[in-house]
Length: 142
Image 1 (cartoon, rainbow, N blue to C red):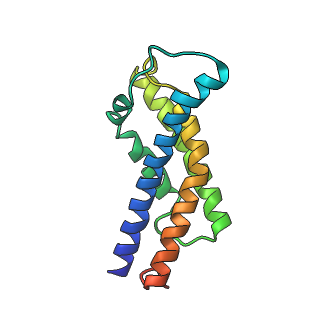
Image 2 (image 1 turned 90 degrees about the vertical axis):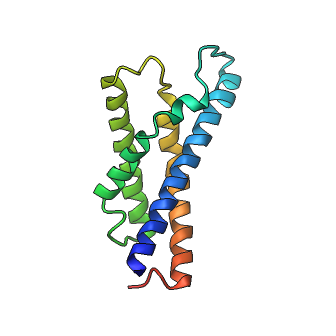
Image 3 (image 1 turned 180 degrees about the horizontal axis):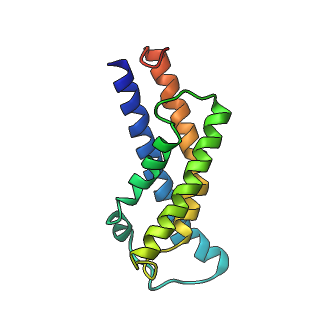
């Protein structure tokens, strides 16, 4: 029972942190980058368009499970390396999926890249915090 609760807590933390990373990436792409480079994108799609592609979130979760981030315990630095590698592989797979589904005309390529970069900060921090809470509560013990 403790393993199940720990697994679900870490999985939900990853989903939350990936969604937060997406929101930050979208904000950067829509508001900050055009202001820095003095460009406007009147054709840019609203945020709801990207939520229709929610299945891309499962790519990140699948790669994280492939990296054994849900079944093994790693030190923080080693976990950071696996998370970074998982984010990088996921962005490549998402680019391939977008290309094969022929939605590349309507999908901003900077958002997955920014999501990877912001995810490299957010995902390890959220996972570390959740693991500390689970350790204190007694659910994440060996």
